[in-house]
Length: 439
Ligand SMILES: Nc1ncnc2c1ncn2[C@@H]1O[C@H](COP(=O)(O)OP(=O)(O)OP(=O)(O)O)[C@@H](O)[C@H]1O
Image 1 (cartoon, rainbow, N blue to C red):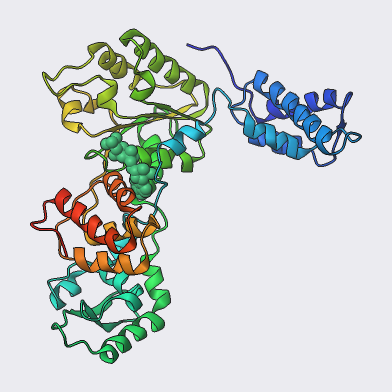
Image 2: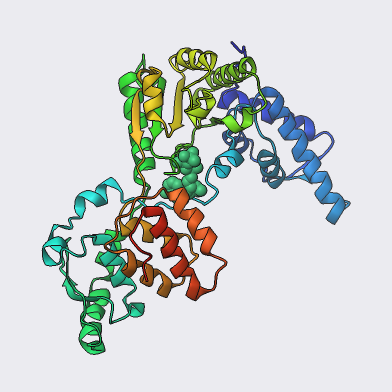
């Protein structure tokens, strides 16, 4: 076990204050230097790192002064903030690594939040027109009505002032388009009920991240040896490319926990089994030094070196994980381990499921509304293109991982606007097994 204790806020304040005082012998210290803020922002810095922080602030000041003002060598708060950004504390957050786990960014409104889901009810729509069963698609079309072709879909109705949106959706007979009759009700709908529509559409947080954030407090309260402390170990599982790693990374970003590290099989490609086990052990020991830690173990089955052909795996890594994922951190500390995997069945066969406090399932995106949210959030399509996609996929069976969908969007992006939608729908069609490409 590593024998390191991290200075608490008071100790950091004293240490930084003392070092700034010493620095004052050689440098002018600006009045805006605020040791309290520095101590606040340097959570989980070791003593050595705090000393380095002060030294680096001085060197930032020197660089700045030499460049702009050779006379006034003054260390300012901005220099300290700059060096806080530059130093990567050993027991800190792997900020860049978390960003790398979300190369496509993070779209909060892809999956409806729990609260929004309970508010919404598409029963009424199904009864009005069972061809279109998707509530969000209707709202999307309503929002972008201006660019929907009159000959494709006619939405005719009003949102009532209570929560439900009442829309009659009819397909217009070919060649009988009548701009006025269609446009008026839609104008009413958009203008009169804009706020309400926005209320319905406002998904503040991704459903899974919100659930993780909410549950983490509760789980620590229920499962820790002392209330609010101890270990929780969660599995985020789901089909390949459904967005599991991004959800874990986003949760870690939002949790404000000062220690966040990621164990990823790609970092251990060259390592022997013994080195791998040592690495996992050391990282989890480091996590126990911090009072509050998150460790993400990405692609668990790959870390276990699982090979479907012959169903082989590394027993040493499995045994190491089985022991370490159950090991409580020291008294007063909290450790949250998040594992991601697309092979829950394998973990079950290996008897690993029992180590998890809870399991969170991340499914594929299904339904046109989720496809449209991603397509819209990706900012790769024009408004008209989005409407064309909306009308084309409205009654198609859909199930696709968000990562795969973003890959398709990126793939068609360089094409000319006219070709882009056709190609995108073609790709979606072959991916999803639609009978023939959508026109
Ligand atoms: N709301 C969201 N939820 C999940 N992923 C999102 C979201 N918004 C955008 N993304 C992007 O979708 C992609 C999800 O990929 P990610 O690697 O997390 O999938 P995965 O299920 O872990 O894949 P694999 O099965 O290959 O390990 C990332 O590029 C991420 O930036």
